[in-house]
Image (cartoon, rainbow, N blue to C red):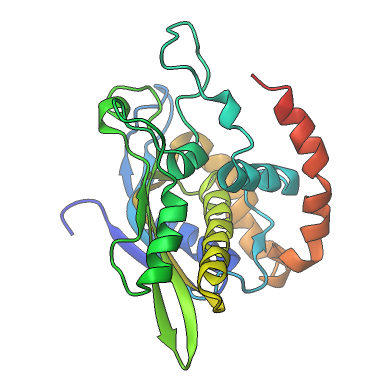
Length: 279
């Protein structure tokens, strides 16, 4: 192929599919420099990647080798789904405010357009649109703000959320497609996927409320234009992830979310206290 490799993997669970995506990327990705490299860093391993997760709530959901801990995963999920860090977004009218440009939650649940009053709750719009027309192809949310993100230092990596409902054997399933322009495969993608599956679950539950019907979670597809492993942490990736494949079987490399969910939920008060003191 002349160009960036286009790779495709699938797995039943989040943990299985993410693991497969890293193996495929490591074996078949191309070498390319990034804007963040130091002079001594080797080029990144990169590809365009499509990851299909057949049953996003299937166990085991949690891979032990994603960088970070269970509290980090809980905090990130709360950040994306519940907006616990939206107060850290900078005031665009204050040039001295150096806080965050955005959060994904703010862009999805409270999208703002200069010159227009109010905000757009795109997730609620998805739920209402699919409650009315389950097969609509228009149920999507975007994050990119062309007037802002082409010039900001750290523009949104997550680009869009697209949903559609299909009925099979009398059961209605909410399918979700996610697109990232850029996705750190090793250090970010697992937490991204886990949090966005929780968003998928939230949307399905909201549609169920609106329709009075049970909407279950269907397949999740994660598309990244640039799915990469930075050269600066190849050694860590090899030691933690690749050598882990040889030391343990799949069961030993994963957790059942059901078994550790209580631990993650118990971290909520501590996380909220920490976030309250940020910014």
